[in-house]
Length: 569
Image (cartoon, rainbow, N blue to C red; front, side, top):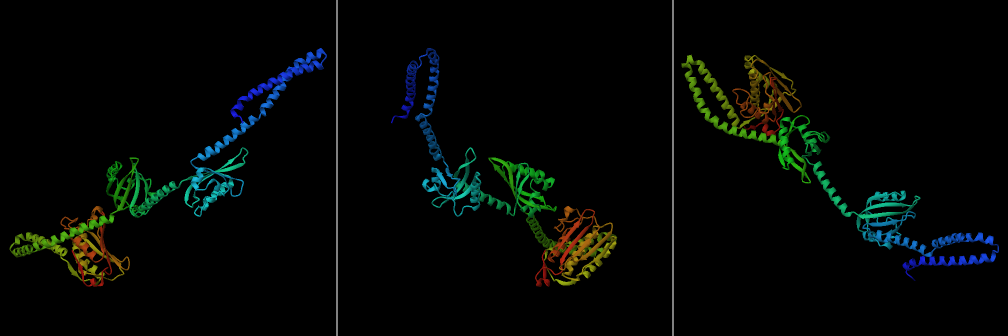
């Protein structure tokens, strides 16, 4: 058989040769025919020009039909189409780097009609094993039923679909498949087939799973952390906050987010916060304490760690981790007070013993000299008064320094209060002050050490009298808020105490009186605490002062301590 290129070259020659032969035959033949049949010269002259035109028409038609139906043309077109079809399937589809399969849309189960090489590599099924099988060949026992249902709905509804689904290879191993199903239609809208693209995304799913796990760990650390954790942007706006804010500051998360931290801090501390945040935004981790307003108004001490948030080498904000150290600070303050008390006790013991002996001598000699100094009696009276004052301070120091064994007994509370009022009534009258007792208690008796409790009430009443130089009324009230406690109030109309100083009452050597030592309230507070109660003061400048004593009816202590109870200074 001759090569196709040779045939293509000889075809014009054949056409030209055929055309020349036919033309010669036509010219000679028509001339003979006309000479033989047409004897009339006029008729010959009329037909002679027409035969040339007629020949051209017939020969053109013959050439058209010969070219149109030339076997080589048809064969060339068919070979080209077959060649192009082979190129698309073999050279394109089989060389794609992802899996391709084709499904039949018109048969039950949409069987596979074609798979490429990548399909075989991905699934382990050869072309022969895959073709003709059900389209669910890759599904397994752990494949999500809802994903299968979505695939079926897409096939039945002849709609495109992209889905991530767990599939299985021929050997039973699983892989995550990013499956894309696309229906292919002809020009009239009839579906021809489905093209399915499969892509193994197992590694991506593993990375996503680890990322999700990491995010869950972070979320758990963030949401369930007992410390307050928040993120703040460069403008100082809180962008996220964990639920611990409710426990620590009383706010819900949505009440805090999108607000600045300055909304919760006294304006006097803003400059400190700006400096603090400025260093953090420079990439320096900061640690320190700050007071934040609780939702109900009181201050909360927060120990804060501020960590810069760095993204692509740039600080975009900061994380703050804060713990409530209010109770810790109070404990430290109490410890400091306890240390002061310990030092005061040690000093008191030494000072009291060192002062008492010379004090006794001085007092004795003044009393001996007093009769002989009649003209100087005013001086000796002042000397004796001051010596007695020194002796009283020494007695208080000894009371503070020396542990004392006391006995708790059941005492009538009303009688105890009336006795104290009677003792100080004369002193009050001299200062144009009236002491009144309002006893509303349903409780008659409490367990206490009578003399010590009297000492506390006397101290409070004396302080109230001294705070009212212009006279007035002092009220002593008693009530029981419940069946286990009683409250005693000493209310004066004096000059009051500034709110900032209230917390210092009871500290060693802190006093608001010119000649006070602060030891009286400190000892009173200790006595009440050892009774299982507490002493509080409420006051304001020029508003008077209320001393509130809360005592248990029966001390919260083992029964044997009710008869032998020791108070240590």
